[in-house]
Length: 460
Ligand SMILES: Cc1cc2nc3c(=O)[nH]c(=O)nc-3n(C[C@H](O)[C@H](O)[C@H](O)COP(=O)(O)OP(=O)(O)OC[C@H]3O[C@@H](n4cnc5c(N)ncnc54)[C@H](O)[C@@H]3O)c2cc1C
Image 1 (spheres, rainbow, N blue to C red):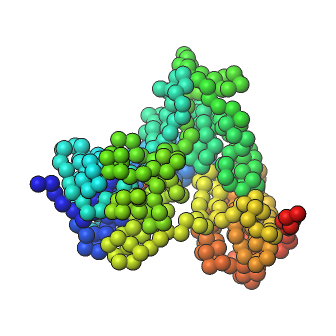
Image 2: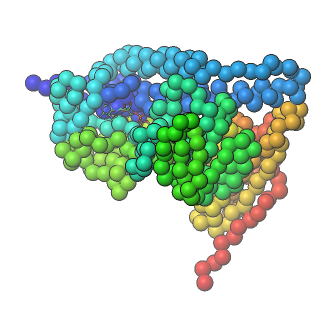
Image 3: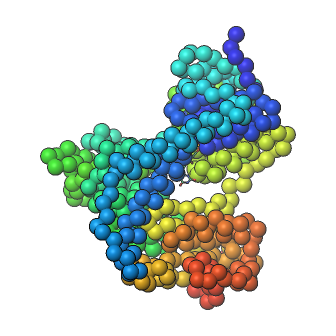
């Protein structure tokens, strides 16, 4: 007889772990399967190790900037193997913490790949065992997509391998223009690699506000990152002194590593979704409604495998809402509007809500306030860098509908602006808020002069 559970969760990442723990707390018998490591992408090879590498990379500027403040710092030396070993220790600690949290919540963990056999049955490939489940939650996340099979494709690494390189590459080519590409460009640049970013579009960070894209690009270039746009990597050849990367305009770049950060695809391959009759959307993600329910009523999916907003806090929220809805008797849809987000580039970006262009499409009248200024710390250090801030206001209601920041601590600032945007704060509320001086964030409540007003012409 197969084992029976109330909930079988496939994938112990951000969404799956939260859903499993909360469902178990409501009294459900829960089993969770993980084929790699408990914690999933965010903890093992995403947000957390990435941010640790970002911290490491930022010391380079700190050492340089110290001189203007009177410090004499001997020529700093960086050791990549030490950083990676320390990072790995921290990830091991977190994995153990996630595992014991699940165990404490009485969730049964199986270290195996799980595949759907039919609408109520899951097979564990490690043992061949089958489990019957009243409800199934697919929380399998996503994986790097390295694009078409170009010559020399075997030499390409993704973010997964970047966390485990034996040595710091002296020269690296990163293909991609999304947040993972720009973050890794900043990491390797800060640690001392020569970085070339190659992107097929006309500017980095597609989908972000145009001013953010331009400002960040200029700041990255100031730091010595070479950004090549409107071109792609066509082939890679191993040569004596490294890897020769051929671009679509036939320019060649020699590097020690080539990393592609060209998007991620939902993990649905070989999962048995056809056997269970679960439908995908047109992008190949699992199609769900606002309760994360698939077309099969007792099968749900959360997180990156649904490709709604591929961020950890969103996967966690979807997992929690699933548990509340299915086992807690509180039907909870997830609101995907106004998700604040950060890009841990150098400098950082923090954004929420509508870009200027999106606001102009949606709203009849849009007021824009923006400013660029030299961060105070850069005065004595003499660093050539500027911070950028923009507020997008609905000109008819005075509501703040978008905020965009590029500069130190932008991620920290946008978390709090997120609350203001969520409670529908107006520009007048921002203005009435006392500034905290001297900070960069005070600019957000002291921008008095409108940069521009866009008024939509009435349809003829
Ligand atoms: C380099 C990088 C940096 C990132 N930085 C950030 C950031 O700064 N902030 C942020 O919010 N988000 C960030 N993300 C995104 C974030 O990691 C994901 O949005 C989040 O992890 C999604 O959670 P999830 O539960 O959907 O899937 P995941 O966390 O990916 O978990 C899915 C789990 O399922 C397992 N699995 C897959 N198939 C099976 C199967 N058949 N059987 C058993 N187990 C299976 C996988 O091994 C994995 O552990 C980053 C991602 C990457 C790659």
